[in-house]
Length: 98
Image (cartoon, rainbow, N blue to C red):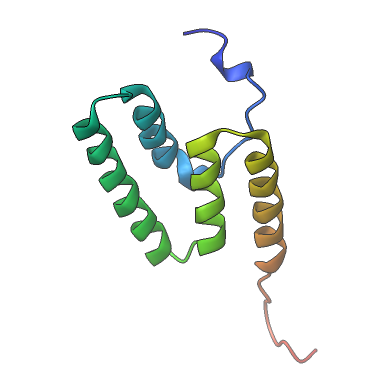
């Protein structure tokens, strides 16, 4: 399927590729409720795994909202939240009192 990667989508973080795959299946399945429920269960398991891996909960919610709706506004909010999360993650080497 050519042409789908140029739709103006916002890039997602590296840790969210399995979530992207699950939400793609949810959008494609349409009326088959059993398959959609299966992928929603997989999304919940992945969100729990990410939360246990110390990924920011706010960022997980923003990424899931963007992947569910694919709206530009949600994509912008996700980019802002991921930028803020990168700024907050600062590691200090050595003595912090210097």
